[in-house]
Image (cartoon, rainbow, N blue to C red):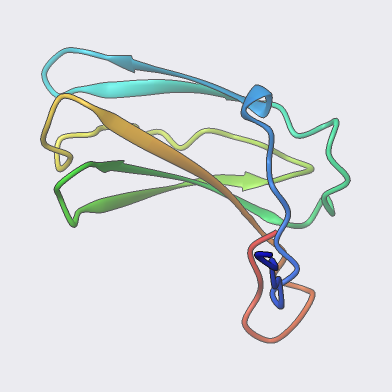
Length: 104
């Protein structure tokens, strides 16, 4: 029997909370629509979207504000991300829960 241990208090965020479209061009960019209203996340928690590509160690982090006040950054360029398949990871960090913050 496999046991799951979760000391960090992480919770899974449903894929339905974010719609992401990669726009080909020079440079390649993306558009993201994030809706966390159905989650029980604190409004002051920070929201980050990370872009990466398989086989590359480059991870680009985009600051989308807080759960209570989502706002896409001005620069959504993916020029550092090489490769055809871009993967995204949505992270919400509650910076008020403890000294170093935690990914929810």
